Length: 123
Image 1 (cartoon, rainbow, N blue to C red):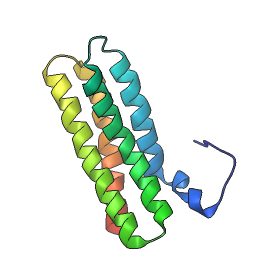
Image 2 (cartoon, helix red, strand yellow; image 1 turned 90 degrees about the vertical axis):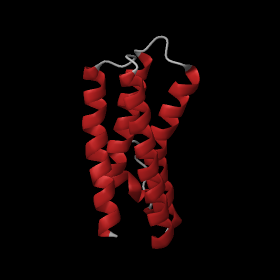
Image 3 (cartoon, rainbow, N blue to C red; image 1 turned 180 degrees about the vertical axis):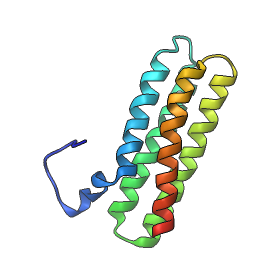
């Protein structure tokens, strides 16, 4: 997906499949959580922050232009990925999220996480 027509070397992260998947994961999660009417506002915020942190840390690390810093931010993104999964499991286990909604999240989360692991390994 193209989010902007303006290009420069600092925006190269937008070409990464893993970044695009992470943005889509945030979109899917936001839609899923909006379907849970009585979800605690703090929990909703924590989940969305964790999911959005994945794409944000991929972008921030990329823009640092240092391999060491890039890897550090990718590890932070992996941590956010684990946090997001844990919180989504929690709301599923408490009956607030149906299995179908969780499955959609889990499928995209798994793909995103594997691409992130592959990116770390390649660097």
